[in-house]
Length: 253
Image (tube, rainbow, N blue to C red):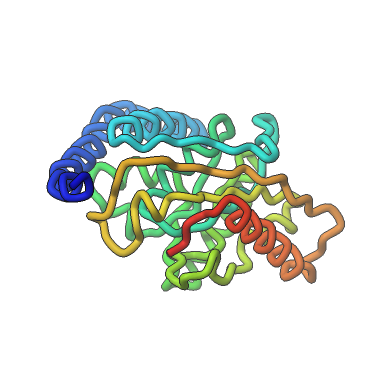
């Protein structure tokens, strides 16, 4: 009976979820426009802070209760190459739940920047990449290197796209690990355990209230690594994140 009632009410919940999503963006949008006058990196840093407030408010409004599990806390005075599993439409808001104090830039898909209102916010908070263009990928890597040189952390989903394999993780690309070694910046893995349960990658209408957990794993240092060690660093990160998903009973289907 309870499941039937919830099923009947779900369309109402969806309307509420999307209305509050848009409302939150509209509230911060005037401030975002003002930051355009400041230039980078100041504009991006302010927008990242605004996104944290927006994420907090939106998840509260839609009944998603988030908790960070800190196996190793993030040092707010350091910068990292953050990596996380990518399995849900909820992953972007959860970035701002997991990383609370560090300035970051996220490697993001070009097509997302075309969404009205959201696209303006998105452009200031991310480094855009067009995966269909080799030139764009090269420029994005150079921009990420510039960000790290400004003592700002970067965030990359090493799987590239949603993990639809039915396994804890899909194959990692090399990019994040090449950058970490080149700049001698430690990898800081983050694992989203319940995101796919809250908002499944198969449908934009699948969002549901409930718990959300994020595990902050110990950093993986890169001292002594050379460009020839990309595969070893990638494998060490993969195995640490996979073990975390299995340890905490993370969802991946």
